[in-house]
Image (tube, rainbow, N blue to C red):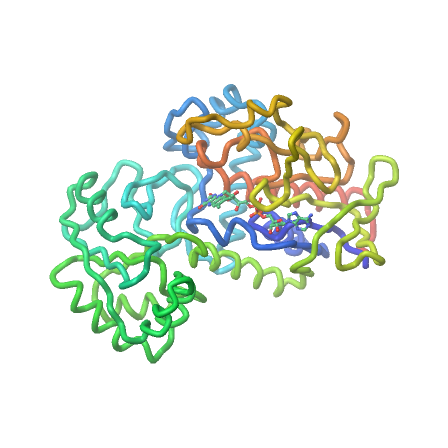
Length: 428
Ligand SMILES: Cc1cc2nc3c(=O)[nH]c(=O)nc-3n(C[C@H](O)[C@H](O)[C@H](O)COP(=O)(O)OP(=O)(O)OC[C@H]3O[C@@H](n4cnc5c(N)ncnc54)[C@H](O)[C@@H]3O)c2cc1C
């Protein structure tokens, strides 16, 4: 099997890279071993929320010079501010072509309401999530936070208390009780956001759900629920908003996350429509080289038929997705054995205080400033590393996880398209 590019990993980085390649007329194949971080994500996409020294970032482009000084190995610092902002804008346009409805813009962070009722800076948020401008407030005085009877992954009283304390809202709580959910509730391990949405999204659930939400709303100006509505599209929520005649917003829940899964589905559908190949449940095990070029990769399911590729993109994610691994002695990248940022001393990998930035979150693959992965200090000519497998940044404390994934993925796709065009190689 021959492809213009083989992408290793089908999370946000791998899928957006493959979509961009396919949009540029190339033939990508994505090999993806398991579920990605999208299934666990809030659905909001961070670009840069804080500098390493803790300074909050209102405007990512204005903070990139300081970031380059404080974190010279950060993927944004390697790429340079102009490239980062150009790719971020491209990424936003790509997501729109995937029919993903998001609010926000790269030049200015907004604040999204978290499942704890606090606010957190981010770049793009699903339309269903309540957000405020950077220096603004929610537009209501009285809201009701609606929990779902028996659903343990969302605590309405915590959200209400935070909204009252931090934003001065009159925030009440209510509990949604629907007979339609009784069977599911009888099995607590199955009573999760996605399964609840499968019931609430049914057309036959709609009249009782709309009537109950109208009753619970009372004279509140807005309802806020856990994200358990609209698994396949925003349409069920839009119909409820119309029936209840006031805004209804959703907050992300513990995983599996409906808002993150919707992002994944939309990206997969776009890749399918563009004719990209997706190989779920398969894992790239090793690669075959000609000098410093990869000629093919071997996967678990295609052990006898290597996938031949002119370019390869490593988007295997971090430790969470087994894109990086550890043993007692070292941190390593398991497919190619690439150079990684890490500490040799195991005691330096983590800090005892859970609430401070953890060193291991910055571990990952080293690259040159085009994001070509390094092996023995030299780049592999046709291997790009993108997304969470990259080192030099902390997605959690710097609030930049999705941004690094999208920016690096589109940078790699752009470089690949350019290099194949420059070499005048016929498409495989
Ligand atoms: C639990 C969690 C929640 C997060 N929430 C947010 C959020 O709300 N907002 C935000 O901005 N950022 C969030 N992040 C940061 C996140 O890392 C990025 O946003 C982004 O989703 C990472 O995408 P990725 O494609 O690089 O990696 P991943 O999403 O980890 O995907 C990597 C994929 O590669 C596959 N893979 C690994 N090795 C191989 C192999 N050898 N062969 C084939 N496939 C392989 C894995 O199975 C996986 O599917 C979160 C991270 C985690 C861990």
